[in-house]
Image (cartoon, rainbow, N blue to C red; front, side, top):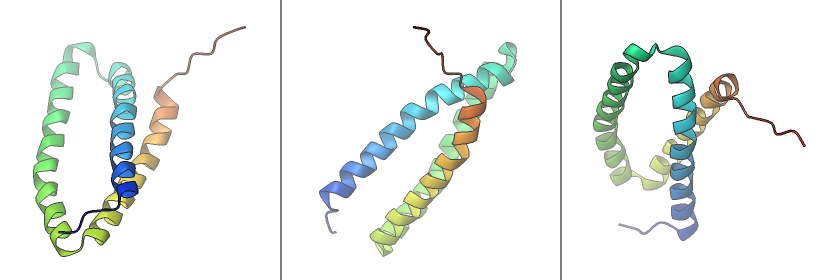
Length: 103
């Protein structure tokens, strides 16, 4: 097994951490505006469970791909993350309000 280049490892971890921190406020904003409060816990629990199930299904495929060709797998994951990021931009613009301060 080859060890990835340090810059690639740092970039990958940075991308994952930024994604995790960006997803939270967007998800909360959408959930608070779109889901009635009496159903919110159930809907968020189902969404979390589906996310875990998708991870259970996808992770072995990623591992198999990494065994076959690590470079192709890394670029494939990067492309998927980039597409997901692009789909979150309109959602963030629609639901997340930036408070402007008056000076």
